[in-house]
Length: 596
Ligand code: M6R
Image 1 (tube, helix red, strand yellow):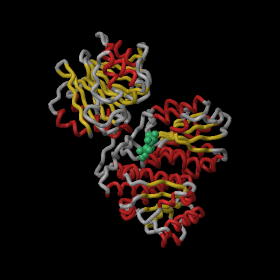
Image 2: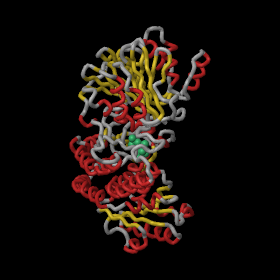
Image 3: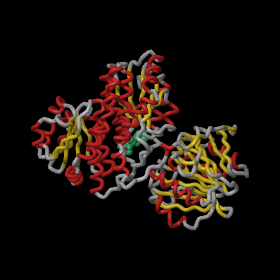
Image 4: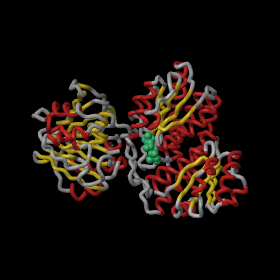
C-alpha cells in the first residue's frame, strides 16, 4: 500500500524525504512525490514510476519541512497527475488508504467550484482542507477528518504553518523525534537514521509537528498524549548486503528466521500465555486460522497440523471471506490471525469480527507494533526480521514455526512442545542445506518456457503447492495453479499438454505413492513433471518418470512446509530472473495491503 512520510526541522527536507521514500518503496511503486515548504510557498515534485524518478527534480529543492509519498494505485491509473502530493490553495496532502465517500465529496466540492486534477480519491482531502480553512489549521483539519469515511493516514502541509500535520485512521503512521527534527512515516524502518524516539499513533489521532515539538489531539479536538520510546534496533531497514535481490537474500535468511522465531516463543513465554488464556476460556471448541495470500497458506498448513494435535475442528479461511461471512464462530472459538505486516486490512477486520463474536484472538505477526497486535488477546511473534521483497519467503517459514509451536502448546502435551523445540534446533541446518544444495536452474528454465505450471500435493504438501504456485505467479507472471493432487483428474488435467509443467511436492511416504499416480497420469498425457520431495519419500519409479527431481532433508510433518517450500521459492526466484522480471517489486503488487 502507499508509503507516506513527513519531516520538519531537518537540513534539507527533499533529501531526507527521498531517503525515507526509498525505504518505503516496497509499499507501492506506481509513482512518487515530494512537497516542501520553501520561501513561504509549497513546491511539489511528482513523477510516475519509481522513487528514483524524482532524483533529478529534487536536486534544487530547499526547505526544512516537507511531505513525501510512494503510491500503490487504487483510484486512478499510475500517472504524474494521480501521483501524490495533491496540492491546492494553502495545502498539500499525501494519503495512504481509501476515502470511501470520495465520490459524494468530490461532487459537493466540484459544485462549489473546486477544480480536480486527478482521478484519485485522495484529492478531496486537500480541497476539504481549503474549504474549511479560515486561518485556524486545527479547525480545518478537524472539520476535514470528520467528513472522511474509509481508511486514511495523512501528512499535511499548510503554507501558513512551519511544520506538518499527521493524521491516523485505520492505516499506520509512526511519529518520531531526533536531532531537533520531527518526523512521521508509515513504518519504523523509514525513520531509522532520522528519529531517535518514536511513538505509534492510534486510530483517531492527529499530530501537529512544528518548531521541535509534537502535540496530539483526537478527532473531537481533545488533547491526547502518546508515549515515545527509543526506536528499536530490529526496525533497522534491510540492505542488499551483496545479494542481487531482496528475494534471494531473504530466502537465505530463512534459517535465522526459524531460529529467532523459536527462541522468541520461549523467551516471551508464549506457551505459558497460551496455557493461561486456554484455562481462562475453559478450553476451546474449535479453531479458525485466518490470513491472506501467503499468510493464508501458512494458516492452511497449520490447520492440518493443529487438528491432528488438538483433536478438535481446526479450519483455515481467507480473511477477506471470514470478515463478511455469517460465521458460526463464538465464545468457544480460538481465532488465529496470521499476518507478516500485521496491517493487512482484511486480516485485521476479520480478527475484529471474530472478537465481536466472542472468540479469543491470537495474532501471529512479524511486526511487533502493528495494528493486529492491538486487537489480539495474545501475540505470538514471528521474528523473520524486516522483509522487503513483496513476495513473502522467510516470514512464511517463521509463520509455520510460530503456528506449529502454538498448536504444540495448546495440545497440552509437554512432550509435543519439547520435541518440537528440540527439532527446531536442527531445522535451520536442514533449511540451509536445501538453500545451498537444491539445483533449480533447469526447472526454472522449464517454468520460464511453460504455458502453465501446476503445483500438486496431498496433506501438508497441498498448502505448500498453493504457496509454490502463488510465488511463481507473483514474481514471474507465469500462469498456473496449486492443486490437491487427487483433484487434478477432476477437471484441471484437461489443461495438461506438452507445454505445461507440473511440480509435485512429496514429504510423506504413504501420500507420496498417491501423488506419484497423479504424476503418472500427467506424464501419460505428454505433460512435463518435476518432483520436489523429502529424502527417501518419493517412490523409486518417480525418479525415472519425472524430468526433474529435487530432494531436500526430511523433518516432521508440522514443520515440513518450512523446508519443502524452499525449492519452490528458489524456482520462482530464478524463473523471474530468467524472464527479466524484478522479483522484489512485481507489477501491480504492494507489500502490505491496507485497503479492501
Ligand atoms: O502482511 P500479510 O502477511 O498480512 O500479507 C498478506 C498477503 O498480502 C501477502 O502474503 C501476499 O500474498 C504476498 N505478496 C505473497 O508473497
